[in-house]
Length: 506
Image (cartoon, rainbow, N blue to C red; front, side):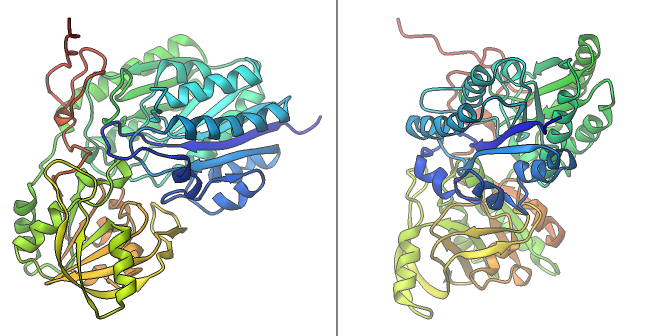
């Protein structure tokens, strides 16, 4: 018997429809905290040894027995909508390989689950619909998803199995890909498709409180893993990405079973367990100066840095990583031995490189996104270090991947050091500070433009972690966003009011 022929690829984007900048084709071509666009056999090398779903799939024992047909793999930093040109250009190239490779025995796709394009609210649903139309109903399609996926009925209908990460920070992306290989092998060995049970929950979960190393998610995800057995081959709980203004935004549960009764029973039980934890998805948030003052108080006598999450400017959730609220608070509070990263400002980085180490430069730093309540910080900064921005990020989130932040610099003002970069990626690895000569372990305060992913590398070295809400496009409380198109009745924050669409103008 010939080896099964399996098409593999990936197309990932997490869309914040309230963010200031769209995702263009060029953003996908370059990547952004992820490998650049890779096609054909080159994608195997591009994702090798990375914490990426496709990497885990390729390394699984089951996949080694198959003939793999590479399509493409690409991802762009979270942002506003994927442009129509980018979606169509990438999708058609992926479909072209599948079309030319027919007939196939199976398809594996590494997707995110929260892509919104300028034309399609449900980017993954549209992609899967087109793939299904090409390969037919008999060919199994298995998909790995980020646990922040906003899963839609179309996605569930078009794929045979959707399998989501179970960690946030995401340290199991490759592991999830390997689970997908096991699931696909099971489908190839059977004439039966699993029964599907899909439930959408009725409140949005703030991402700052979705960390799976903390309650309530720690216990909930332990239960998810424990539910899987021969009769329930895949169980997923997706906390959702609460910044996409369309009807299917929000948390969900997907269960696959040997029969519909088993799948429905497990989905209902898990949904009820999650619903009972709704009050636990709320935590303490500081305003910028209050957070800095608390960090300074805690740092007195501490032997490790106090870490502050600048959560509302998280480039991993659609922020531009350039707001100045936390930096201005550090200056106002006269913080010392403090560092902040990353500030995305290619122009400031260029000025620093032209001036050289030791120079004092006057720049209007950051604040270029037009975020309400934010503005550039015009001041004199000392250039302490320069870098080409290329380095390995060995921490658990980036997983040893090689990052290219473009021309980068360490700028200092008073007792505060700032990592200035030319490309966006959230501060989620200690190496990002070290790349410009800042030793994070020697700082009293670290301010990270990230919501949760930073915890994977920073929690072990942190005295404590505080969450601050400076101006930015990723609201720590989803209820603060100007929603228009959610499904009626969903609560826009835990224990909040049900959403009621505004009346259409007469």
